[in-house]
Amino acid sequence: MIRTSESTEHNSRRGLTVVELVIAVGLLALLMISVFGVLRGFIDVWDKSETKRSRVEEASAIGEMLANDLVQLDGGGRGDLVAEWIPFDGDADGATDSWWPRLLLVRHASQAEITRLQARSTEKVPGQGLLEVAWSVVPAYKGKEQPDRRSEGLVMRSERIATARDPGALPDPTAELSYFDPRFFSKAGEAPAGALNEVSGGVLWFGLEFATQTTLLKDGWKAGTELSNSCFSWDAWRKERPNKLVHAWNEAGAGMPKAKNRALLPRRVKLELEFERPKEASRRTRLTEFLALGATTMRVEDEQRLPKTAESFVKIDGEWLKLGAVSGRTVSIQRAMRGTRAANHDIGARIHFGETYRREVPIRLSQEDWDL
Image (cartoon, rainbow, N blue to C red):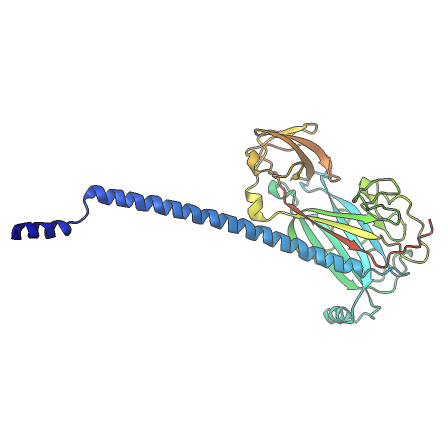
């Protein structure tokens, strides 16, 4: 009996066998793989959520800044508003391949803003209570070394105290150049170095649309040449400053009256912004075949990395396309969307897209008594 007790005690203290140890280690490994898989999925979701949140916050901040400029527009004799589309040669081959908007305006300024701008200048400019503001979008990169950045734009902005000027008068060669002076921006569409400050990069789309007195918005915005349509450009003094020869969207809105002694302002402005962060861009799919000028379908590496929403817009180099039916890796497309021009695209070109942020801004000082 004593031997039996000792044998039982000995057996109860016996360690794991090699087989049991291998099984335990295997089960632990499977458990760790499962845990790390869940953790990785959680991190990916969190990373995408943070990227989306950051993008939405940036778009909202820019939209708020621009809306703040627009709601304070001056509609008097010294007021002004010019919106136009400017051509750029992003790949430096001598031909226009992208168009971006430029917005110049005169708005009311608070005393705090005047004081802040006066403090920056060694020469005190007499405060007139108005600011000149310039918004411009330019290509993020010009050249052939970084083709993936051809779709990207930089949002630029600057402001200065507005000095007394007649919007219809010839420029004074001895005075500091106004943003509205045709000599301020170069023929390439760029401002003097350091004149404008970068607000944000990663912009794919910066859309502006204006409602005239006759624009009907009950059923939504629709740009066109009819009296009921909205327009993509604006000239508060009807001086034909937006050049309609460089882009059809620079055509004045239908039924616009002649400017008399006050700046003509739109009733409402619609802003659309679309951003793509570097992390998002790195996950985008690419073309697997050359996309010719007249092609109506394209082949991609991974159709799962295209927008999930039907009829979404994507951008390749400087051209916007609208997606149609997807069959495997072949996608039907509509070319030359959002005012761009159809072009050839090389194998491996990255397909860009983001989420669109929209905001409408009512202009309180718009003239409802336009003499039509």
